[in-house]
Image 1 (cartoon, one colour):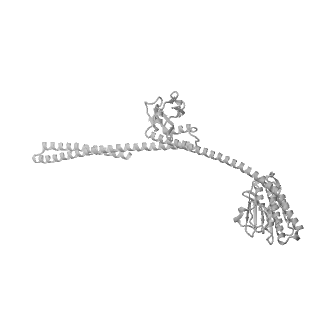
Image 2 (cartoon, rainbow, N blue to C red):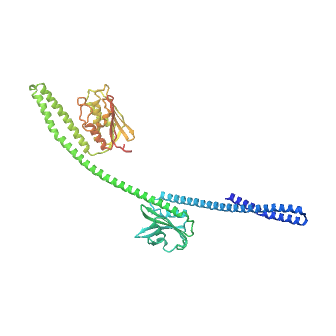
Length: 505
């Protein structure tokens, strides 16, 4: 704009200079004519007339040039005026964009820290009003079929306000707020339409869904530039509406999650009660059946033994073989009944944790297991100084099952070795029983701890398939878990935890 003003001044100076040229030429012509009339002869007069005609033509041409320059100057002035107006328009548009961005950013900052619109109402009104150039603000909400003002804010609380301004009430067809509530569009009121001391007002709706939830009204004691403000205010209303919708959606989602969690908890509690009831019934049934089966099995084994001893000479080889099979089956049945009774007792017994010298307990159980097979030489490796916080009676049962299994499955080994140790791991302390016996295929590891599931035939290794199930039941009652690793022909490692916490040992 400075360069354009400089060019305009230079053009004006040139036009003034050209405007003076016809007057100079005319003065020169008159001077020549007067001289010739007074002092010249006839020939000189003719020359003077010719020169005068040329000068008159020059004067006419100069006058034409001056008119054209003046028109050009006028066109230039108009172009300059349009450029200035356009620059001012662009400046105003930029100012409106910056004001809109500042108001939206201020609103976004308040909403980012807000839990609800009601809790952040004063901060929102302050931020929006200040950025848009207003002195006060209030919120209109629908109550009882009319609009009720609330949550008013003022930049200068000591400044005079109309009586009742902060808690005013109006009908839906009254005032700026009613107009905005009906139309759903932002609107402004200028000087002459408002009660003193207000000179300008801007109101915009907060629409949630298809309804206007609230109307925000901004007021100024001195009217700010209102151009572009309705559009800016409408955008801020959309920001507030989006926040309300997000909060409602989040609250609805949280309520749904709470309902689902409550339903799940009820279902889990019902299922847990049902399972506990079934387990108690199953344990009672298992104990009753096992206990009641003992007498018939003993009788069967006793009569088979009596037949073998008293009537052996009357039976042929097949009869004696049948009796031997009956006695063997009776022994296996008796072992199974004992294991079932033990499993039932493990499930029903009260858990009493105490500090244990686990190394001593393992050595004691190892001696008992070794004494049952005195002819075998087994290398025992028991880690010293291992302590645990567990039920001594139940843990002894678990160790008996583990060490009996290790003793049984190391029979094929040329130099059988059985080891016990403890390690610290991500689940706390882990206890391990390791052997170099028959091992197993890891593809079937999931079956090891299931009752009556065996990976070897009775001809290979005796057993009922209940021992590891008993171990797992004991470990679970302690809050731990049990697992196994192995390879066929290279031994197996059984590991378990006892749900111990820091400071238990």
